Image 1 (cartoon, helix red, strand yellow):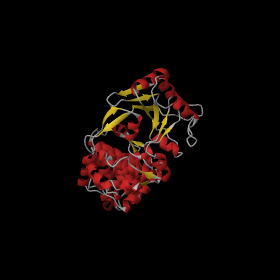
Image 2 (tube, helix red, strand yellow):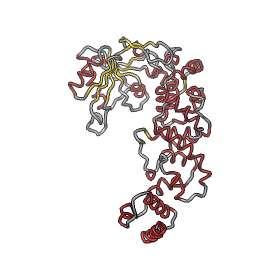
Image 3 (spheres, helix red, strand yellow):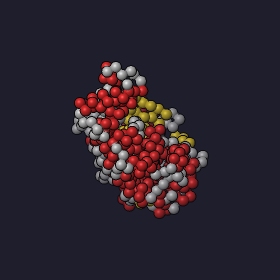
Image 4 (cartoon, helix red, strand yellow):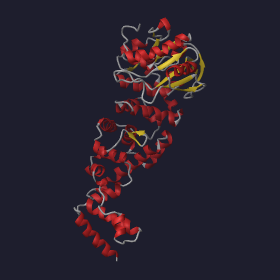
Length: 429
């Protein structure tokens, strides 16, 4: 039986039983650990299934796939496997879903050759596996196999720290071993309204230099995860308070005004008229707009420096650069006609236009995104060809002139457009 303070929906419990039964049949101690148990204790729903097996986790994953379907991706070097069930998760009767991919790992011990290095691992006990984790709140484990099903393992008083609202490392060298834990500490603190425990907080200054040793991909991944959170602006503010924004790179800015900008920009609903999907060319839109809002005040050289340190995807850095230039150009566009705005904004990423709109409130940017960019002349290249206009640069010149006329209100009907075209063709002869 599960402890009284832990309750699971029936479908999740049944799913864990599948794993538990297979582990029991193979005499393999099995545990669900970390975030799932933490969130369960806190009463938060979670599908973060992290299964640890004292024994061969890869063999267990393959046995589950043979019996229940799906595929297994194994990583023998680390003793881990991902069991992928289907593309949409386990369907259950009440319409809810379970994860489509479950991670199973062999219990292991870790050692670090140097600060910020990836760990060396060897198979070990559940005690060693729990002991390698980042914070006490993530050390809780539930036993799954056999008669032990539902037993809670709390080796580091993680439940008490959850109740106190404390983020506490397991040992004084934790941040030195893995500086990414500095960012995770802040995420947990701000996500749950906790506090970083005082002795843990005292370890931050000595560990801060290790952030510079993290690869661009690893440190940017931590910032990506910040932008996945609903309290992203507050997390960045706390990272800056602890000196961790500048530890990533000196060019990265922070201020009270930036916090307000991000709080407003990341929480404001994006109107459907902007036609911005939640994923923007393969990257979550909140990453693109988040980084753009954060960094659009930088100079071109500072953006290049940030890019060298963080290795943004191309569309992210293109958005930042375009937004920075557009914001700088706004004074010169004061009083511009719609056609002049369209000429300036053509080819500018819509994420950049949206970010600058949020910062400046310039209505012309919204008008471009919602209306002006979609306006085209009624007459097209085929119509010009039918009128005997030779293909070439004249096509582009005529069509752009007709579009500008529609945008600026010079023409308002197909008849007026034809009259203007007649004048343009006469001028060409």
